[in-house]
Image (tube, rainbow, N blue to C red):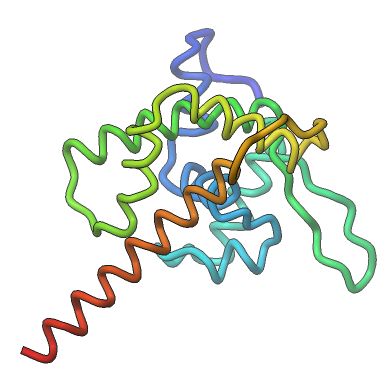
Length: 172
């Protein structure tokens, strides 16, 4: 896919500039959703199947994702490429803007807040973990849980707290 102009911002926006492409990447990166059905049913925004199919094709054509070979009766598995992993700082920057300027639920904001609190080193560690999962890179030495486990733990804790507060509010 050739961009309409030689401008690097235009070239990036043509691939990543629509809402659904970024949501699909978010779900692949943070939700480890790598099959069509998981992406479709796991989308809290309710992506339509035809839109999802179109975005997956576009992301594969742009070199952001690869689509594994699916044999009869099997589901195709999508993986990030290095270019896809390199979208993480962009998604992180958008999330930081959203934390500052847009409303949202505490549990859905908790992952972004953890990444902001941990800083750039955490983003690099997360990119390394994505390379292990998607590109079969050798594992890096870690002490303690990896970044995806930490993101999932902070989300689970925040969701449990919100549920507890909701239950307590109903009793009043």
